[in-house]
Image 1 (tube, rainbow, N blue to C red):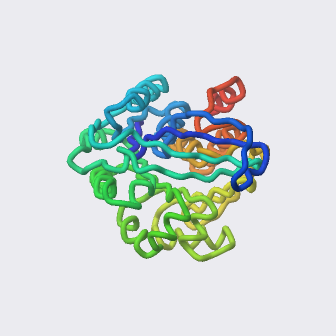
Image 2 (image 1 turned 60 degrees about the vertical axis):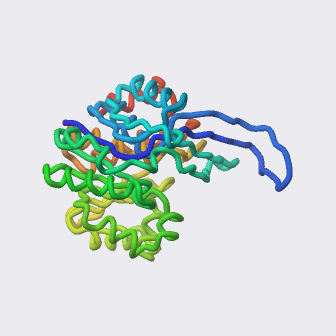
Image 3 (image 1 turned 90 degrees about the vertical axis):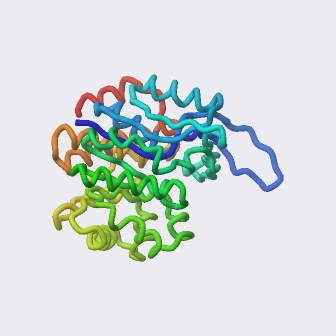
Length: 308
């Protein structure tokens, strides 16, 4: 089994403080450069968890683009980068506060300018799964390219997973507009967090959110990520709560991406929605106990992945 991920590769400039930053003030903290991008993060985590993974995205012809290729090669992800002289490789400012919660400001780098004719269609055709994130849908380009990728995958009978990415961007776009671009993709796994689910349904209770999303996406498995409360799976009309694996939040950056990658890797191997969600919860729990979206693996992560 194999996975294609189409979307963003960007470098995260992570800024973390242990105290409140006052307006006009100064503070010591950590300023780090990490590889990121929601789609690229999913690709890396799927590969770390054992799934053959292809990444399709766009980078600048610059040093950060060179580092992007090196990063995915080091992670074992097969990349199909399109390079451009017109735009720089993407970057994102990630602010992590003293509670571990994160806020992000995304620059519009090369990843936002992927065009339909640049897609390596044969790669999508010959893989079994396609993952997309809503970062490829908030503007056009790259929306038309992402929709074409879904069309190719759907024609091949592939499983299509989708992460709605940002409640704020959904609200700015408008919920009706968002659904107009997404409902016809043929999504089989939908992976929102609570705030994204709330924005998309105008419901507050997780069970109501999941049920409403299932009504919008007929036949799709809904996995509502609930942070410290674990996750809620809505599959074939039944809802199952997945308990959290940790409450030790250090940095929430990339937790949802690691969940998606781990879920797809486990599901591709075993075919169980609930077991895959439990495995993904354990991987995401390890991630939030470390800095960055893709912390270097250690023995505890190796033990988790060995259960896949």
